[in-house]
Image (cartoon, rainbow, N blue to C red; front, side, top):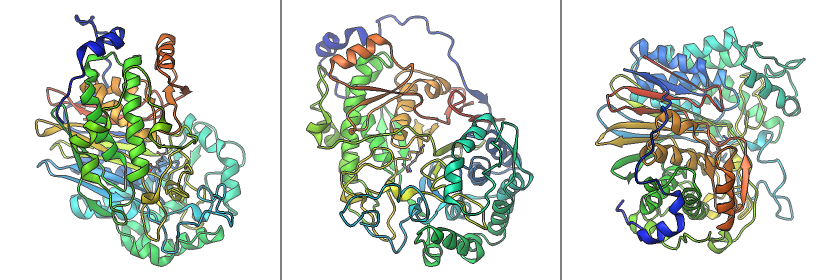
Length: 569
Ligand code: DON
């Protein structure tokens, strides 16, 4: 991306108090994450992180560790870790090969574009979020087996066994997990007519033990029969039967047909750093490449972090990028996506050229619409680097917290409610307030558009950073801010993770601000520029790794917003 510097006079006049002083003030001691020489795992759960470290101690590479962590998360982090969902992996081998794996769910063969509409053409409330019809065909198990077939080195049995042990021996709940399970108790009971281990007669308390015997049996089946252990046989029948109890249409044929896809990464350049991220059906890579081009055009390194100038420019860039997302992006196996145009310099240079420093551009002038967004943290991301510098970023989800809330009757795992990520009807927002058009309409066998943005950054052709987060529509902007925080604002990885985030997604036309991110004065200045502000408790839960100048690894888990844990050796 070439750099166009805005007329310095304009920048100076308008944002003079938000520009960095000529002489740098003494910086406070910079908080670092966990620093280790050789390997690093950062995930949302200490037990899953430990599993990944143990795999590498046993001689496994980062990809082996990722498979083991992913299966472990399905047990220890049931709100988002999963067997019944899907996700994406972005990886970089020690030789510098980049690759991405798409194990996103698919619409069932029997799905069609109007399946969530009533006879008047209105979206039926809740149908794409709860119960059997909310689920797409799950991709996580196939994805992990495919990753193993291409990049695994240890025996597959060794990678899945820790998850089996955790399910059988039980896991001790943290305070956050106990209260999260309690919060959803009513929905668990409403969506399952049989006993499930996630419902306790009395309420869960921290330090209670959760046993998951059925999921242990399922994992043993996958251990012994790999794909056939999940996509055919009793587990597949159980998925079909369970979903069928509440209107589901996923069939045995859907399951036996399911395959993950290797896809060429989206690559972009930001100030000489090479950005490697997820292509469609995730919108993450394209949107991230666009956001970074806008950022380079306005040169954020001259601004004070989270000042009015910074947030205004970021908002104006994000508004345009999310409008493109809604219009152009969907499953590339079904739709023509103008991918090359969207990430090209010329396109973005002109896309951001009407940004005014003096006032916001109302989203209605970019495209019509009025919708709602919600705060959420139900996906999960982990980052792993091994001693040879193989690296992998994986983001996986059931979509909502505990997906559709339906637990498969005999096999014991939560099913996704990913169908809600399709555009159910043009202009009608999904759970994250995102609107979409034809490119993301429902079609038989098609994948729904995602915001998940697992990303790897290179510097001078070497590994530099591994990044990712949950957060629905805020995933893209959180990953983007983490990268810019390190490169432009000179933060450590831990500071970049901890830093308060802000978010804009075109519609609704509001800036979402994490509480504590800005001063009253900054808020006043943003309002003067025409912005509407809306405060959220939390934005983002990044789990990232940075390669330090001396070659050591800084692992940064989001310990301020979650139970996340970084560990290495
Ligand atoms: O794929 C997507 O973009 C969403 N299904 C992700 C959902 C999510 O991140 C939930 N909250 N953290």
